[in-house]
Every structure is written in C-alpha cells, then in structure tokens.
Amino acid sequence: MTKITAAITAVGKYLPEYILTNQELETMVDTNDEWITTRTGIKERRILKEEGAGTSFMATRAAQDLIAKNNIDPKEIDLVIVATATPDMLVASTAVFTATEIGATNAFAYDLQAACSSFLYGMSVASTYVESGRYKKVLLIGADKMSSIIDYTDRATCIIFGDGAGAVLFEPNEEGLGFQDEYLRSDGVGREFLKIDAGGSILPPSEETVKNGQHYVHQEGRTVFKFAVSNMADVSEKILERNNLTKDTVNWLVPHQANKRIIEATANRIGLDEEKVMMNIYKYGNTTSATLPLLLADYEKELKKGDNLIFAAFGGGFTWGAIYLKWAYNG
Ligand code: UT7
Image 1 (spheres, rainbow, N blue to C red):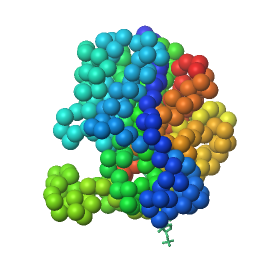
Image 2: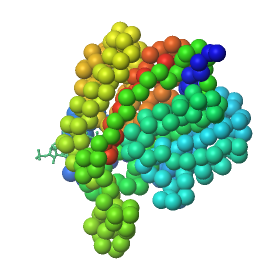
Image 3: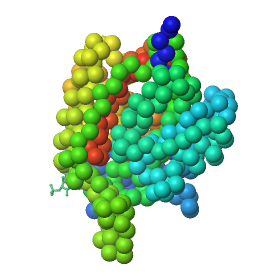
C-alpha cells in the first residue's frame, strides 16, 4: 500500500488595508526609521482598524482567498484549525466562528496557541491528521491581530508587530510530497521574557491591571533575541542533518519573521544563500502566527513541485522548532 503523506495543496492570505509606517511611529514614540530598519528590517506593518473586527475577520478572509483561488467546496473541509495568540474571545473558539463564516458546515474546528510557533505546531497537527487517513482536507489558518495587545506608547514592542492572516490546505499525497520531518521544542523558562501578565487565570483583569498596562505584551527583547538566534539555528541545522540535506539541496528557508537579524543568523548557520530565504518582514512586521503562511502566499508563484522547504520558528513560552516539507505543486 502506498504511504500517504500530507501535502500543502493551496494557500491564501489577507492583510488589513491600513499601513503603519516607521515614519508614523516616529510621531507616536521616541524612535526613528533608521533604528527600526537596522535593528529589525521592518519598514511598515498592517493594522486592522475595522470597528468590532477581531482575528476571525482576517482568518475568514484568508480562508476565502484560498477557497476562491482554488475552487474548493467548503463543505468538503473536515477540520479548521486557527493558530493564534489573539483569539476573538478568551472562551468561544475563533476557529469555530471562522469555519461557520466560510461555510465549512461539515467541519469541526478549534484554536491552537503556541505564541509565535502556533502555525509551525499547527503544521505538525494538521499533517498528522491527514497522514493517519482520518481526515482528507484540513484547513490550517495562522492569524493574529497583534495591535489588540500592543501598547502603542512602548517603543520596545510597538515597532515590531503587525496584523495579518494566512491559510493553507493539507491534503493526502501519494507521491511522497508534503510533510517529511519535524523537530519541535519548548521550554517554560521563557515565560518570564515574553508574556501578557494580566487577563489570564493567574491575574484576572481588574481596574488595577488595566491602569498598570498589564494587559499588553511585555518582552525583554535582548533575552528573547539571544534564545531565538541560537535555537532557531540549532533546530534548522538538526533537521538538515537528520534528513541528509545540504545548503545545495534545500530550496527555501521559510523562517518566522520576528527580526531580520535572527533570520540571517539562521540562514548563515546552515550556509544558505540570501536568495533562498523567504522574507517579507519589511512590509508586514511580525504577524506572530501569520508569518509562515504569509510567506508561502507571497512566494507561491516561485515554488516548484519537489522543492525542499525548511520552516523554522521561535516564540513566547518559549516554543520553537523546524519542519521539513516537500512542496507539492508548481506555483
Ligand atoms: O516573535 C517572537 C519572538 N520575538 C523575537 O524574536 C524578538 C527578539 N528581539 C528582538 O528582535 C530585538 O531584541 C528588538 C528588536 C526587540 C530590540 O533590538 P535590540 O537590538 O535587542 O535592542 P535593545 O533592546 O538591546 O535596545 C538597544 C537600545 C536601548 O538603548 P540603550 O539602553 O542602549 O541606551 C533601547 O532603549 O535601543 C533602545 N531602543 C530603541 N531606540 C529607538 C529600544 N527600542 C527602540 C526603538 N527606537 N523603538
């Protein structure tokens, strides 16, 4: 019997219209375009401004883009996973609402949260369902409205993050294409360095927590940077070794877009030329769970059947890892 692998067969994306430039940030906090560009590689990011619109607003549109481009019947989708660190609400699932909005009436749905590694971990989960033979069409969406948890008076965080959503469809493949291997890690020592203190079960929201700005993201950038650089490079190196891949046989690095310097350090460690490294941080910033699918959507036309892709991410928790996937169609 042919072994079933799980391949990505379609991608889609959504970005809010509003563009927050470095120049506009200069008018909001004590920063400048030169600092932001050299330290992060970011020039602008998108912000969702629509009143009352949350993460599902973007997740729905990314999924609709995928569905329309590939002529998919949403009723055939078995499962919808929304990878996100900014759900619409704390309890009611963002994925369930999204599935209903797109007409995936035969699917079940749930959210997956692992900070900036949410989509990477989601790839592991989605592909496992497909490989097992249990489900045939698994829609994985990465979406985050980071602007809803950012303090726009804190120059250490507000320059980094942006809003956006990307979606991929996993389906069975009989040619050995798609998901090949994963090396996923996590370490709770990281909790102190990248977190939102209030609003969860340890410190429920109160007048006091709001007054103290404890409902916003707090990041010790330098510490997170050091962990991100070494760990993203380590897991990328490991996944290459384990699969007998070299810098010549890898076609693309698909790295989480947190900081251009972290991406370059990862690429350097595995000896990859710049033109094999997907990058769109300059125009979207760090969209957390959406960075990886947004890269796939932006680079889709350049991808060829059989290309070897290495995904790598690092995020709060800490959570991190790398995935090796063979691309399944010509873009
Ligand atoms: O995606 C999830 C995981 N997150 C990450 O991977 C993010 C990892 N961290 C980073 O990307 C970087 O640490 C940052 C971009 C957040 C910060 O860059 P950095 O090179 O680590 O800067 P720093 O925090 O060490 O700060 C250097 C200096 C400080 O001034 P002093 O103490 O040297 O006088 C900061 O106060 O830069 C100052 N600074 C700024 N200056 C202008 C910090 N933020 C800004 C700013 N504009 N926005």
